[in-house]
Length: 147
Image (tube, rainbow, N blue to C red; front, top):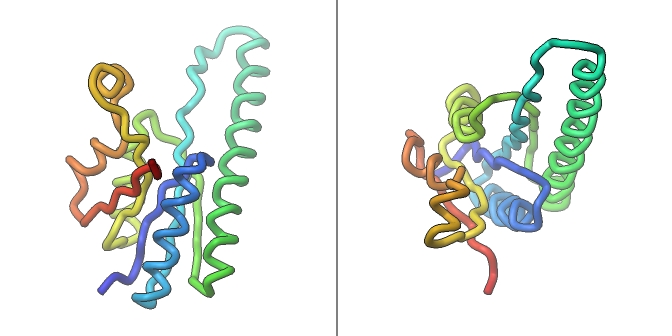
């Protein structure tokens, strides 16, 4: 049924759980996993040396976090014998980066975690998962935290 499953990762335990769920599902369907880590670009204004140093430090740390999160998902896939490819992209709006990747890679399912925030906290923080659900052209499976 599914051929390519997109798994957005952020390095959290919930992201890991979504990756495990997706890899198990991919194994059942003979599908492959496409991992994506979306980096929010540094608000670089281009004035002074301190800004350039801050940009480099930010990008180095963001790339390291992305590599660690994608390596975690890669290991989950290797353990299950599921084909994996992953990429790190920069986008100002995370959910748009996820949707662009799903479209560009020809993914037919998105599996991602949701922190399950409710009420005012959800309104203030927004929800990447909610926006992906609202705008995705393919099915989206949300992995919720265990109680």
